[in-house]
Image (cartoon, rainbow, N blue to C red; front, side):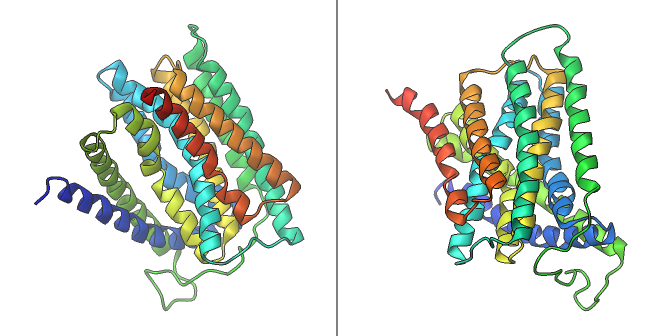
Length: 335
């Protein structure tokens, strides 16, 4: 047996488990949102995003707090920047490609354009916070760690804004809760239990996926730094990406886009605060290149959402920014 076969088998098996767990998670979190009487957008931007971003934030916390060396703590800094890059490029592109494969289009109704304008506000919040976090990575000064509190406060303000929105059902309605398929109105505790258990499975399977990827990369000759910047963030953001695929397949485009937008807000604030608290938060060239691509991608999304020109082709084209980032990292090492 080839020594890489068990690694590849575990990689594929964990990806399948994550997808199946995401089916239960998105189903459960929609019911939790209904029970809490929050809007469809808040279900995606707050409830779903918080759940799927929590494991990645835990990884960042462990890296920056318990890392034995500076190199290990820098992994947490890379994760705080790699996550938003993947969400701004690959995640939106996956929504576009899924729409194309499903032969579906984003509706151009006034309600959809209103959703787009709301999401453009999220892009504006993200860009403002992201610019500040990058600027802080260019300078060293004694009181920098205290600024981490401001990032937590920024997420608190975003949370409050989203939760105050008027409740509105997402198109397509709710499917029966998978833990109670015959009940028209399942109890709240069962919806919460299904969501929590699915999240535990997602977290465990994601750790297996990342571990196997870390093993596979060096075996294929991929340098650890390139692996950490190019592939590992995709692995850690896999739950958000799979959530988007599931919701797009169900015709719930608002939830898919809101989940990505909300996860980006968490990634822009909570991991950054941890990095400021426990590391010098100084960014090298590769991280700055990734930050530049993230800002370009998000600026494009902000304009598109604001003027209402978002289409499946436009969303799919966001992958170009990630490919440009990969080229900027790889080509100098080949020359």
